[in-house]
Amino acid sequence: NAGVMQNPRHLVRRRGQEARLRCSPVKGHSHVYWYRQLPEEGLKFMVYLQKENIIDESGMPKERFSAEFPKEGPSILRIQQVVRGDSAAYFCASSPDGLDRTDTQYFGPGTRLTVL
Amino acid sequence: SQKIEQNSEALNIQEGKTATLTCNYTNYSPAYLQWYRQDPGRGPVFLLLIRENEKEKRKERLKVTFDTTLKQSLFHITASQPADSATYLCAHPSGGGFKTIFGAGTRLFVKA
Image (cartoon, rainbow over all chains, first blue to last red):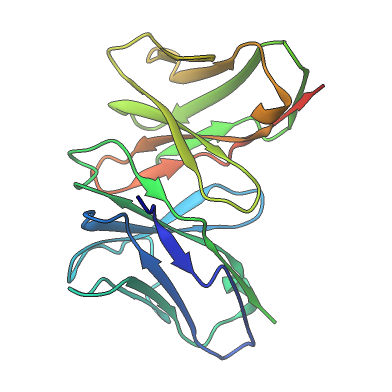
């Protein structure tokens, strides 16, 4: 019974490169959330997706960041032209229903992005 | 804006004692609060949820209280063990229903 899987676990990029973070939700979950965590700070909501739809992207920077959750395959968080300030841990979570109807999110182990 | 405050200073206690962590929230009255545990290098793990009409919730050695007047939740670990050492996060849903707002967490160290 696999939980949320994220890969890669660690990603190193140079400034200006692209970072692609993948998230496979718990089997049967159709709701995915992405969060960013900086050292000594709490998790900050970025985006909420359902299959093929972005429901709420209010926490995601308007430029360089994008997310998708295709009908087949994992959810992808894409950061273009990375800058040092993008260095953080990025966590994905999934739930069987939307958070307006369920209480529990299941988190993945995170991807630690380091921008040199 | 909605905000959650947790004690940023680490809490050091002796094994066997009760650990008490505090979560204060402002600018919102959430329908429930959640507590998560996060170990270094790992994602948060859900522990307990308490609703606004519940004063107290228990699960094994864990106890959570919810005071809507004080806008505060307390998280207790009784008979603490070194394995309880971790960061504990408090969270509540945002008004819109799609997001969860997290506190920065409190680091707990339990010494043998």
